[in-house]
Image 1: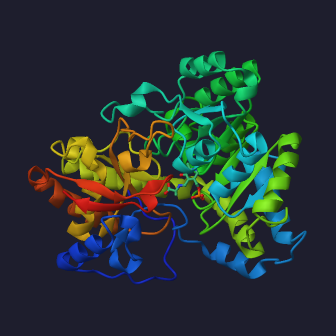
Image 2: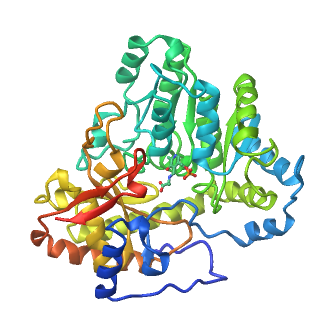
Length: 461
Ligand code: F0G
């Protein structure tokens, strides 16, 4: 008999979670103005809001916590992490930051100061904080993702890929000085946790070089991307994840990183680059916004834990279980007929809310409606990746209606068991069975000027 797969870890510490009744949840979500970010975590049974900062650290990482050097300047924990980044990513210069968006703030400050009017930053569906930093500076984030990414029924092994002709058009339509960088997000969160192929990374890099444009990774889930390259791209099946990672980074000038994902730590981020000029410019902003160069908003102990986390997340067994568990949930949902994006993403399953709830009008926030229903059904907290997240056009202030209305179920690293996956799938199946009765969604009663989804308040229609 073929041995079944099993988690490559055992559990040393547990954290109790609390069940609740449907009546309690109906009251709680109403009080939360139908915004799942407003719920208290104790009102949630299985939390799949995000895989960011929610992972479980290993015993080796916890051991690093005790070894942390908390010196203001020159801490050994900094040099430990610097060594790991240089060894794994091949990047010589490194600036710690307190999380991914802080690294983005530092990088975009270095590239465009406070004023990016007329500038454009092409890429593959930038994450919302990246877009936020670009648009906050009045520049534009241009999405050059391949068209296949926007059809959840098409199987394409690398839906995070950049369309080279779209990218070249951006380069032809704008003077070089107006394009400070091209960002490749690996894996591409906004298009569904979808990977970018090595070939595409290489070709984008070549095109950028031809036009004299710098290219950076948004590297939050770089290890997951490497796993997909190993599984799906010819020529990589017998390479180690670490070899693939090294090759991926050899094609770019640098990266911003949210360590809360593939760093498997609860907080942290960084910039890494081989460009001394960028490092020097960014250093000034790092000191102003984050902290001195050898801690940048991170405690020494956290830098130590991150150093170990990066080594662990670039192990094949770790990724095989992690991505395997996400796929396990995906298969369960498919079995129940729930429309999900395929192929399954690395960190999350994305439910196609437009196909799930065809009767809810797009003006009434389809994916948010589904997220609220799932919470009421089983105390499962997912997150809307749809019109609320897409926000308003910065110029016209009209709602932007993205092609996809998705409910994301993001799975923390080493966090839940496969039984929790069964539970999530059953709850969603119950909602699916009564989908015909769900015909109306929500209207906004209060929203912020930028990144509204975090604080938006809604009323049922
Ligand atoms: N880039 C990507 C691709 C991300 O997914 C995130 C965060 C960031 C940058 C920003 O990093 O949170 O450390 O400041 N994504 C989280 C999510 C919030 O739930 O997907 P951060």
